[in-house]
Figure 1 (tube, rainbow, N blue to C red):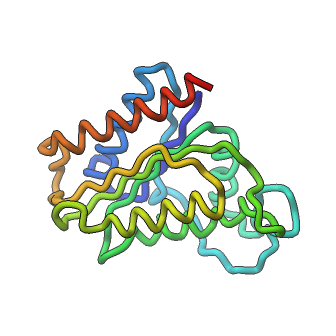
Figure 2: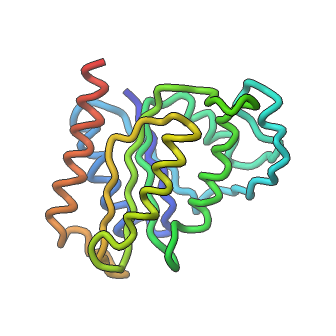
Length: 190
């Protein structure tokens, strides 16, 4: 199976990517392929709400930017590992823009254009504990509601420092590994 890890963090060696990578390593150890996309390296414009994507069954957008390639990679994969740090109370701007542009996956009849895609979501913040569970729930509910994606796990990692502190949180590491097992096992059993 092929998974796509899409990071909304500008720090490729920061806490968000570190926890996402724990999930990716678990999938790779079960012989699944994981490809990475770093949204901060991409040119992605904001949705214009023109609804041209609703006029076709194709997954497309009139905005010709890097989302066109990302759409194709999403269509070709079996599951997503999504991650964003919290910046000023919410997911990063580029991650929000990415989520907005996924609207191309919904048809004019308000039904998803593809089905069967699973996802795991990683949210990382400096605030302690599970302070930003509401942000993770909001994103998860969008993915499940609009796109009918199947949630395999949410990991909200609070208490992180600006520098890499992820390895200091064994409970979050364990939870990330459990998400990888769930994602892998669900596919292996299909």
